[in-house]
Length: 80
Image (cartoon, rainbow, N blue to C red):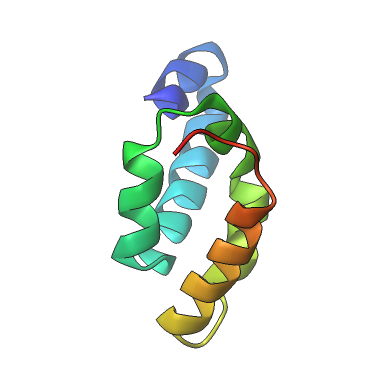
C-alpha cells in the first residue's frame, strides 16, 4: 500500500494519511471504490487523488457521487 510505504519515510504523517484514506473509503459508493481498486491504468490512478475525490464524499446521495465520478472519468484518457 502506498500510504504504508510513505509513512515509513515520514512516520508522523501516518495518522493523517490513514484518517484521509478512511474518509475517502467510507464516503464513496462501492461502485467507485471497486473501480479504483481494480484500475491498473496509470493515468486513472494519477488523476483520482484524495484531493479530487474529497468533494464526492460530501455529496448527499450515492447517485450524485457516481454521476460526478463518471463526469470526472470522462476527462481522463485511459485504456478501459
